[in-house]
Length: 276
Length: 218
Image (tube, rainbow over all chains, first blue to last red; front, side, top):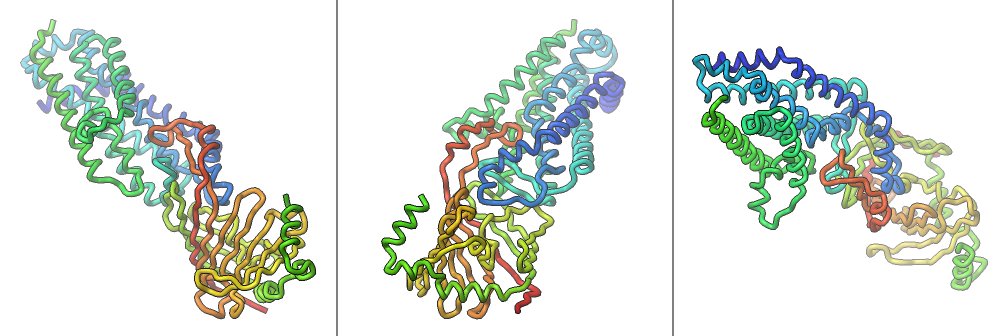
């Protein structure tokens, strides 16, 4: 099993698309930083316009912590999209090149093979997130400096630089669970659809659907706490003035459950299906 | 608008002459405040607005007579546009007349109430009311109706009867609720300037707790 995982990781880091994914992360960061540089003050002015009637402001809100928060908001759509496209390719490419058949002609069990795909996808996701987190913090603080963070969640919340750093770190860690969920979903979609383009389209639709369904409010708290699209936003709760750790923990545990379930479905389907 | 107000005040006033003289108690308060040459202070600022969650902020302030107050902080701070004028110099900046309303009660305390009415359009307020403790000559409250930014109610508390400068100031003001729903800055959001413009006014406040150092007087 360990050898299979090692082989999968070797393949991943030999593929050009892995480096496209890394490049995409940097392009996304650069885009956010350049937009913030040119438009950030305008957005902040709109934000604080009403308060400006009663207050004068001293200090810089367009700082590294705000930029990191903006990058973190790419967890809504951009980062999952990059991950789903690249990760699903780990399997669809092998279907296309028929290397799945070649591998399974060796003394390798189907179960171990597909599990190693899932594990490699999780390791790759962690790697991309690691690069994203480290580069975002370094570049944001380097170009925009430290300062208080302002966020709009049921009002305006201001956090000191230290508090902001801690909350952003927790948010990235909690948000990573959502990214792992999407990575696992994309492998399962690849198992189900096999063909790269179809898998990408379904993955994108899945992501769009999840984002839209997130806004649905059910009367039942029980449904709200179990409906999977509503579990993908736990990282946003870190920016409530009082962090609802219990809610975040519950949502995260259920999301981990869903991640395991979706992986199990993928493994079962892959095991049952003939490789032709 | 201002001329109508002056007309009404004139009718209501018991004596036209007395309404146009500067209230003697206010003159005493001003003279007392004018004796301050400079001071330095540490200020803790606590914002109390329903839609703003901000930790208590700290700033340093410096005052030198004849110069605007300067404020410095390592953090982002929201400085109220009114309330930091400890000596009320902003109210005396342009020519004004006063109307003494005599003794009134303010939170169970006997006060002398004076209305300050600017006599020039250059002033940024239309009328200000000042509640003064006559025995100590301490300003307990001011209510300033500004021309652009609504009405400010400013409450002053002192650490002792002899203190000229307040230890705690509460600045209450009108503020419009923020409804900016920015998708990329938060959850469930989109820019909607129209909604923001229509948002209802509410009262907010900021509390300033001040610790003075280096107060110099004439």
